Length: 264
Image 1 (cartoon, rainbow, N blue to C red):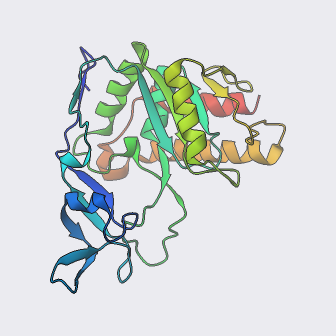
Image 2 (cartoon, helix red, strand yellow; image 1 turned 30 degrees about the vertical axis):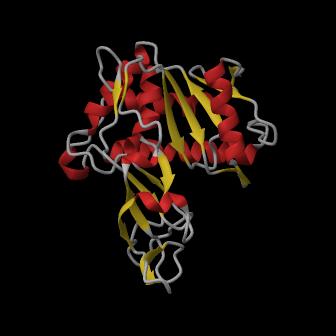
């Protein structure tokens, strides 16, 4: 994202995708350049094809040509106007809108997700446990505060900030139809966000089947607990790796303010 003119550029020259969703003979497989954890088999006519459905090995992956997408776009000149943090936190409703720049960036810096099947975990590590991956970028080679300040600047300059929960909300699965419907309503300008509980910088959009009322004390307690997890993560950055990922004080203050309002 260009911070001055707000245009965006895609840096990846290809696609990295699971193979299990594309069976033998699928047209999409014609665009595979390389594959990992997937086998191959010789057919009766001598042709060799990929065995893509995780039959022998789990977690098949493939690098696919950029030509896989018929309308591939590498640069969008229109200024960016919205940021979506995709999370899998069971206490986050299907969608929230954040208005505070510090809070919006802090929630991205404490982006909660779950381990993917692509990761080889050490013995005893719970694959279903929530983990924090700042801005969903495990490849950062510079201080985390750089991303924090840049995203905060974008939000402060008028870029909308949303959280989409693509996992489960208190035991109820957020389905693709929910997420796609939410995004469509935001893009078309028909989304109706309103004040949520006592929060000053968080708004919510009602989605049928998902009750995010703090009248449910168990839910309110779980929400506060997960926010405390985020606070603990931010505090841990002060000493982890010699403090290279320490965040500015306002990041912690924004998260603490959410807990204070949640308990009000």
